[in-house]
Image (tube, rainbow, N blue to C red; front, side, top):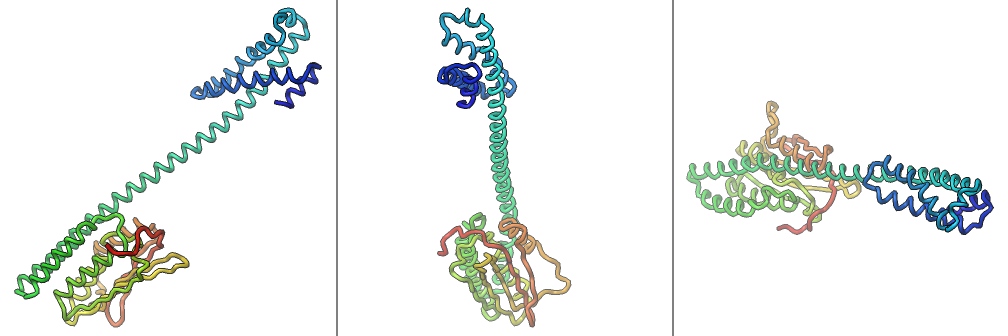
Length: 329
């Protein structure tokens, strides 16, 4: 604005301050009109600048030359000054408005992209929650029916352990019930349920089942899909220990590479092993799907044979965050 005022001053050989005052007034009128029409189409906002330029220029001449505005504009020099000021107002006003519209458009596009990204994240989170709930609904009946079938077998066999096992089962289900559909499950809570389940299974077959739990306390607060670890342990009991007369041992553990954040959670048994004709069951497919849904596509579940017999199931994923304290509920 100062440079423009100096240019007009040199062109018409007039004082600097009056020229600066005229330019400032025209600029203020344009600025008011530009923001007053902010809800209008861009073309209408530019049209407002075009229409206001001669009116604002005339207003400055009326104020400066009153009451001799008529004779002043009748002169060639006065008319030329008005035309030049109007043309300059058009050029500068339209240029500034076009630049401002471009910045507004870019800012609006950034805001729209941010809103769209936020809605996308919210939708993905909703889909993930729905997917996890569906997978949990598939796991819960599988676990409950198998456990109740074990109690039924003890009752039908007349085992003296039937009543204590049933009592422990009731206590277990009472403790596990609130966590069956826990979307914020942790490895510590899962180990708590696994330990209760293995204690229950050991009562059913005290001479054929041993187990160990080896997890560092600092991993207890690590996020982990609800019931996923229990599914692996249940498979180890059902397909590894149960089919053998000598039984075996189940080892549950977890380690974390602090440099990379990679976590390995495993369930290993010394039971019957994997038959060559065995096909992957729904439980393992479910665990794989829930690991990917929770930790991303790089998460995986691997099965390995254990010498001389047995199976080791390993969950590999990258720990993103510690969401809870290490203490167990």
